[in-house]
Image 1 (cartoon, rainbow, N blue to C red):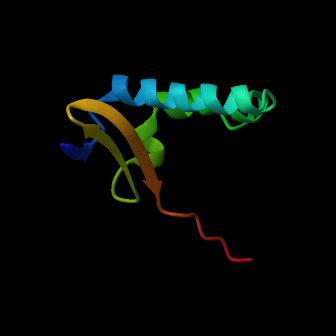
Image 2: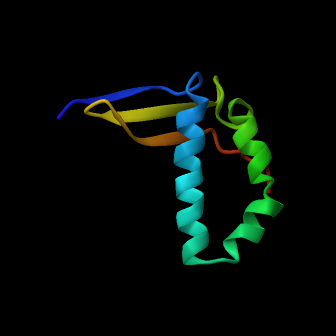
Image 3: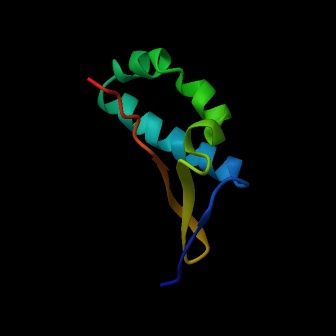
Length: 83
């Protein structure tokens, strides 16, 4: 088994496919989730992933297994507020 993890910033098509698959899974489990995604401006997030997951405060990676896209992960620094 060959596993490879790479930065995903130049692989927008693969990221869109994975995010879409994940979104469809969530919506099929709970149709109300679609409204939540609309409120969160999810479509705009997908078009500008670097805004949310770009360096230096974030990271976006793709994972491949045996040369096939296997998954992705987006990391971002949490926003800390004084409360």
